[in-house]
Length: 375
Image 1 (cartoon, one colour):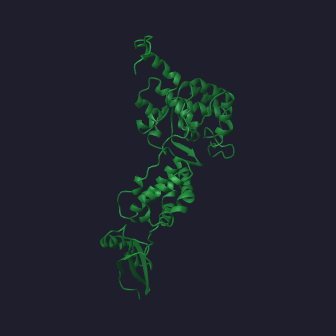
Image 2: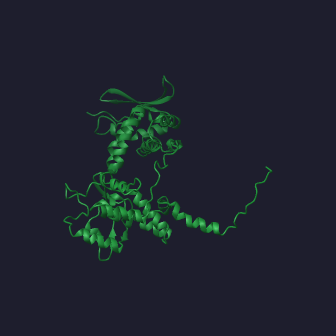
Image 3: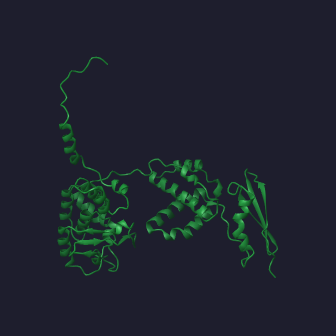
């Protein structure tokens, strides 16, 4: 015979180390059990009973125990790992898992959710010997944990206190953008062997991300209509959808790129433009291409240290110095917003010089006046 309906009892008690908690007492198979909840999380008895409703329903149902109730950061992390991490892209998943394991868990796992305070987090972040961008990532992850705690109704919905924590320099670039001229990229393409020369050519002509170049299939190209559609990306060993709807937009292919692709296709035996030498059903792994092939050749011909994104930034710079309108540049870069496009590229000093000289030419020359003796 099952036990009669119960919801238990709650009372407000003071903790020995300070602060107050709600003590929820209930019976399971005749044995008394209890759980504690910070008053800071549930300021009224009504709010406490509302939160316990699901557990009480489970207690009086088929299960002998109510649902597990999370009160510490460790519980949040466990649920985040189970429900959120698997839905993320592999690169983000690995980054978040590393941050949780190396930094957040050792410091905050046993901390009650209500005790996660902005000042304490700020002090902790300042004491970490990691880059500003990594500190920003740690702060972001703590904020996401609290957002999920509110979404899962573990704590009352309200303003996230992690919004008060600021990490100086977390969005600042750690390295200067390297911009190449069309002549420099041409010399790089000429010095490379296939398929690397073709990959750099596509990056220079269309400004594609390397993960999009790697995932290209011949069916994505219409060499008669001279267009290409970017349908997927290959990153961290996984095929995934492109970043946004704008990323999947079609792009025109210039004649010289069509000619190069037609020549390259003569030796193609795979649906991928750049198949893996070891697994023909997968694209080529791009991680070591830059280090083992592109950068050594670039250094040999006197180019600066470059990355794949250097080509995308350079492409945006070339667009900006031409006749393309900003809205057209956004579409060619396949960005969802113009503000993103404006964060790319830049202008080389020598490209800016004629504009500065043109303005200076309109100014009246400075006469050779003697410096004034008066201060």
